[in-house]
Image (cartoon, rainbow, N blue to C red; front, side, top):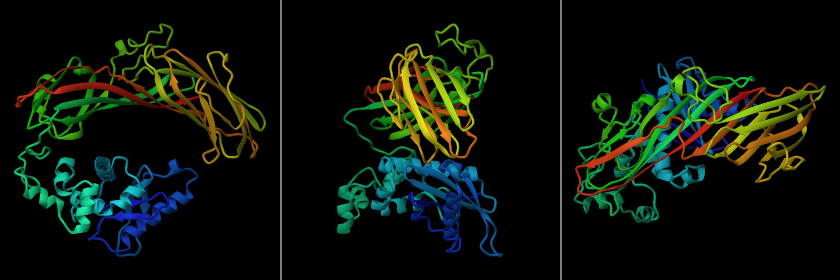
Length: 465
């Protein structure tokens, strides 16, 4: 199983850089670029493009192929696969390559990749070999081979100097792959030794018009930032490890120790990495224990997670117009919902959109017209390109109530809005699983590091009405 290569496009569909495609004809990557741009031109909205696009063969001697693509900031990464290649394998490699771009450039953009063309091309060559198999994908190992971009490295490159060779020649650490541990460099030294853990969880759910959760899932990951000298050995234990399941670990984790007592024993990589990924499934007896509202509906299914808010929708249809009212109530007893965004597709031909936002039972007046903004009552906008209403609440305090009222008409006669709201939100210092770290022991080195643990959550919910 192999993939054919990678192609990076800008937001206009033009290629920025691509792999060598040594085993394919010269026209092969152009076919995939053309197939993707054709799919974009035919789609009504950007989200309508299928993640895997069928690409027909350009002559009878070749076989059809598929184009897997992922959007990242203002670029699009294409991954052609042919023969018996698995698209999931392609998507996994794209995700790994995107993580590498974030490690090297922060937030990658078309301008950044063009300015660092040589670095990106080296990364393509080092991460994927000529046969389509992933080669070196560990950021720590790649930094020894491909120097991260900096002003000094660019100046030396122009002057004809090889900074990587110069550093390795004057250092006792050695060159690339000199460490016996593949994911960690040898001889690391920090003046301040510290390690931080972020428990990041993402909720995805679908709710029907009666407010009953049809499906819900929480996937989490332990993002780690390690700045420890030498070769430390870490042991991370939890007070309630039973709340997580379907775990996937970084190669540094010793699996036998996890199977024995659900503790994570590992020699950490240097810098940012994902220590583990997991899924949270609550027990039926404790699904609503973390919410204080006794009148809130309970969740009887083991697979459902209590949602942090309630939504009530009232939509009335006329011959060629629609009036709507949405009420969002926070169920969080002590945490604030941040960056709440509610979107509803109004249908083709929607025009004359009017609305107002308010708090509570409407005591705070909102703004009316084609756009509304108020830090107290929230804000709303109409996206004419998507023909969708976007309702934004920067901070929804615990147990607060928010309302959006509005109306619009339809040029095409009968209005056909989407019968669902797409809701996104963030919660700081909170996790749905309530996974708690008991202690972190660091052995093998003669220092006491600073340790930090925090949690944050986000969610994406389809609320039908």
